[in-house]
Amino acid sequence: MIRAYEIQTFQGGVWQVDSVFDDEELAIFEARLLHERGRYVGVRVVLETYNPDTDEISARTVLKLEKTTKADTEARGRKTATAKKARKKKNHPIKK
Amino acid sequence: MVLQLLHQWREAGGGERFPKLNEIDRAALGDIWDDCYVLDVDGDADDARFTTIGKAISDSCEEDFSSRRVSDVPTNTLLHQSASQATRVLQKAVPISMGGKFENAAGQTVLFRSILLPLSDDSEVIRKLLGAANSRVLAED
Image (cartoon, rainbow over all chains, first blue to last red; front, side, top):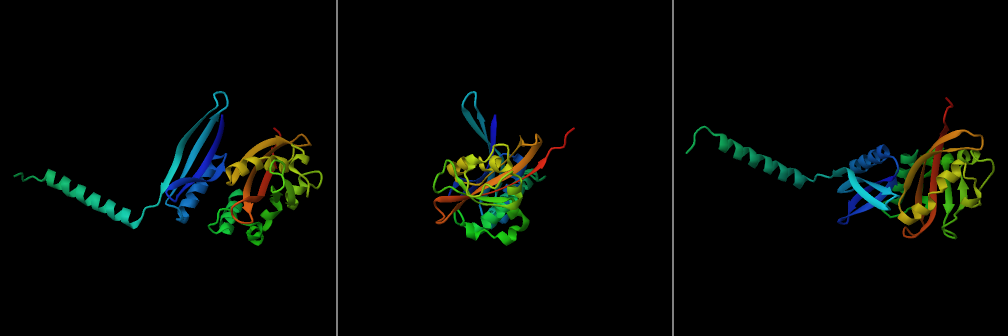
């Protein structure tokens, strides 16, 4: 089995390969650093495995990091507040 | 070393796809530059030629391979093991880091980690590759 860890960044609406590592730990470390720099909306590490016996390539995401914008945080806050309100109304002892 | 060079490469690019060789800040790299080499892929992409080889990586070979081709370098050297990824870097057009081990001329097992990064004069066509590698000899049991 041949393994390659691709760091991919989300830019221009598509995921693009940024760099390739053969070591998972290094790839994840670098991906986290890239994400912390805040330049990309998303950074992920994709493990590509090539089976020379079957000539098949498989891919799976081992890490995915996405930038949270202020709008995302506010939307999440509204969603949480709405859910809390709904739960409170449901559990209120006085029922009509 | 690998990540430090990768970060320098990113900084040098400044958002462009590939930086130029003269945009790489050698002063910032410090001693790492001794572990680096530059391959010219413009003439023959399948068998690139070394234009620069850092002292540390050059000393790990038994002769000076400046201006020579990758195929001239014995396979049991750090320089060859590192530069052998050149074709893959050209195909994918992204930096590639790999590690591994090999047996050197002295019969010692050498562990290494290397990286190859694409360079360009116009940030579009890859003309050169910047490589770096370091290694250590595995202690015998």
